[in-house]
Length: 455
Image (tube, rainbow, N blue to C red):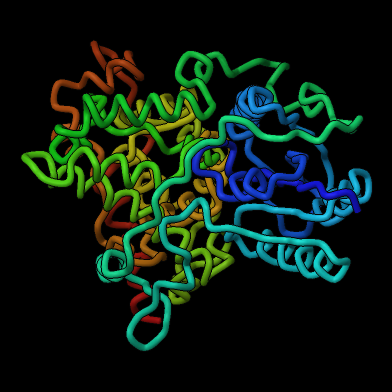
């Protein structure tokens, strides 16, 4: 084989702090960079529509960044277990590097591929890139996974400091080969009929450069107010890094070390620690998914299998999806989601609680809707968060904790600026009536929970 290194990009669409790319550059042989759109391998969950939009633009940004290094990005579509070996044969490569994934179908695919390629004599390596702590390294004293966040995060903080970020390469040797690549436009990732993505375009700029700018702006301008303001949807003090982290346009190591370097001590150190604990919450979600692969389809707490979900009311589900429930904060949140592809985290909890505990609709229906409409939907955080609100998940809020959307609005959007921005019909007279009675449905939810308790 002619010495060439294939770098397989997946959920790590960046050149900075990219261990697989860094190792390939260090190796010194010509590099073939590839992204595989895999919608064919068993168990791989197809991307939602908003995620597909983000992926299209993120790949364009990565292609530009790699091009400045002298490396072309090859696009292929198909089952990765077939596409990667075919590319090895096509390029006569002798090494394949990638950064690890943690959902079960992807892990199983990667393990089989690594074994097969090594048996064929290739140098195959995988690297930790997208989590601060590998899920198998954080264990209780008895050697079991954690199911509660606080001791999990305490155990993480007792481990060695997360590694320093790797510098972005300034140049690389691209393989000078005539390699067929799919046309990104032909993948059909963008909506066309209709084109509903104007709000996403108005809100986001995918890519590594945008991610770095967002982190810098957050640390300079918003972090000092984070601890007090993060629950206020009317105040833009959250980091807005979630889609950039989801697609690996920035690494958690970069977030960790830049935050620590700026706010290791001083008056805003506590706010920095609170922010990093939210990064830890993301780590916890992946820890749970790693040890409970069916998180998106099965209750983490098996006793919730007895929960008596009533027959689905499609009209109520659609009213929730479209932000037409007659409940101001819920409607505002669902419309923010539709327009921007994200929703403030406090409002995510309120809208999820309303679906599962006021409408008594199975959390899996909401998880699927968010999977399709969030630009930051990932395989761990999305189902983890839904199960947390529903009461069926790890470290879940007690089922009897039912978010009252009126009280939540009064506390966290007291001037109703958030509601009036996204649901302006509530600013004057003639606002729509709620589709359900909040007190009566709360009582019904608690009565249903008694079935779980009694089982």
